[in-house]
Length: 106
Length: 123
Image 1 (cartoon, chains in turn purple, yellow):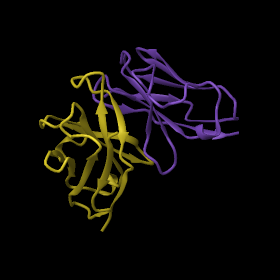
Image 2 (cartoon, each protein chain N blue to C red):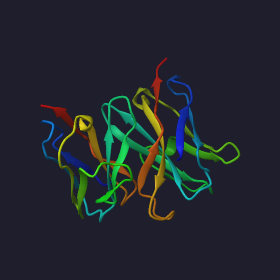
Image 3 (cartoon, chains in turn red, orange):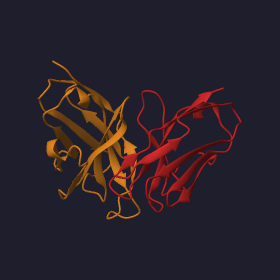
């Protein structure tokens, strides 16, 4: 199975900060990489699909980049509603998720 | 807009069978989507269980394949999960989700998800 490794596992940031989360695949997955946001007690919500495509309705402060094995989710200016846990997920070979990155208030 | 809602027992006895149903509203289950089950535990995080197409094609996680059965009921616009021989390790929040892609033959991302249902395995 393809392993997905996210870093960091948690981070503290302030409103207005630029935040970057990385996801590394154990082998090349082309652009078969998606990002989700999950808030406590809720289901994950799709943010970015196919590495860099913004899901409809998602604020433009979210962006994704990368291909092959290394991917990045960037929040350009962190807002109060962005404090949550973020997951990457690959679909190149079956489906696996990263371990998550919890974004907390500094 | 498609919405998904899981239902089923919240408590299952060890060695029993976990059975869940996902009702699809706002769209047809016979559309060009695959339909998936995913579970989440504090220890293992998010784990894909498997997926089914309305025609009956399935893909299962190899680690669960011997215990998983998925099915579609087009008359009720819903799909189901059965997981047999459960243990405490199967205690999790179970989500159903639509698996979509740029084409039906290349499903890729999960959207939307149901709200999730907690299933506890305990005697």
